Image (cartoon, rainbow, N blue to C red; front, side, top):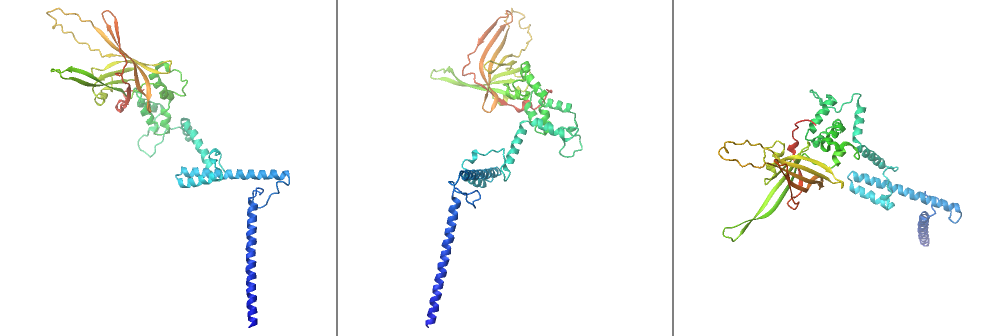
Length: 435
């Protein structure tokens, strides 16, 4: 019995010793881990994190090495942040917004101001997103000079340059076999004498060859000559004739300038004298310009849907229309003004001699009426050159017998509302003759 108690006591002692040794080993391992962790966090640790650097106070050389190691760590951290930021940019462009936010957050945790340190022209070592940014910049440069790029591509394709190729095999003759001279003549018909440059721009969207033909300098030069005449001999300060057409102030031909005027006037008193009527008067002014320098003007109470179709050609049968000529004037204050002289169409009525056969005819003094109009060309809203503001309006009466002219100048007040441009598609639906 005593021997059994001694064996049990020895087993318990042995178990306590094992437990104490295990706890001692855990404590030792924990102490070693803490020491190593504190050692790695110390500022004197190398970039690998495995071997400590010598103490800073040991020598001057050890301090320089510590600074170099710290600089390498900052550079590596910044490179990693750039890589994450560019990855976030790529994810955002692909539409993965949640992934992009995750990478943005990781990059800003490493370097808070990484957004301002990104240079998109240099690709970081990694996913190659920076290379894509460089390629995108090159594509943008190509778009700035699309005409020369298309010309170079057509030159490199074949020895015999063709402006376009049929997309599918056709049995009929394709337009690409036509000579360049015939194609350019077709393009002049598209522009027509009405200067329909909108149709020319739409035609340039067909293919690269048509784009090149639509940018022909000779076409745009003739367009500028028809609009401004001899005053556009010099191209400076514009880079091309097309740029001159787009940027230089001009009147538009593919529609009508319209103004609407309203006012209230007092009517006659009633027969019983108890009230006096008031009338609201409403009328429109229409102004249509033509590329050959002619202009039409009409003042009428009829609304635009009934009047605009009559203004398509100059040979209209509307009696109230005034016809004349206009010119553009570039003033010293860089304001473009339009001056026009318009008059009513002359109609020669035959003299009825039988009517005045038995009594003496009182001679009527014959006169010619003309109206002088001055307008300032402006732009409003998104459209350009779509507004005309009144600056002058006068009536000139010339007596044929004496040659004297009486001038009556009208005051420009609120009755002269500005004219705004309205495009009319039917004006350029047909081509009467080429440019």
